[in-house]
Image (cartoon, rainbow, N blue to C red; front, side, top):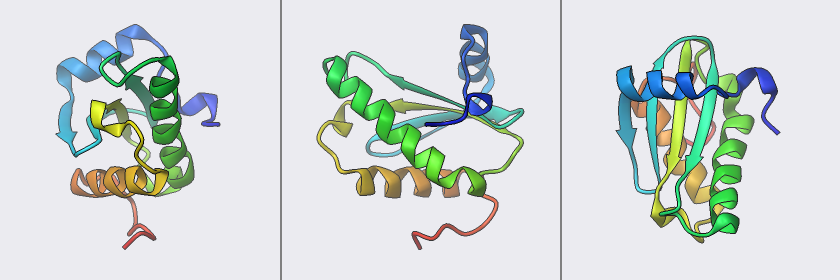
Length: 115
């Protein structure tokens, strides 16, 4: 479970990041980011599927961040959005795509162990 201090919870925080943040996208996940204290939000819309599939998508993304949180800069707030293609994809594949996206966005402190 991702620690509470690292979670984005307020609707206003999400709105600000969507409005002012930069966006990046890969096959399974899109990402919006902005400067601020290290926090993360996770979204899976009904396009992803039923509630079971949406919850699984959020759990996959949350687990990637939980495992790699020490590699991410402290001055960044990020929202991850699951895309419809994430259904049925393995954790390892989601992890690879998300870490490559974070690397391309220059949000990592050090080189990831996936390389």
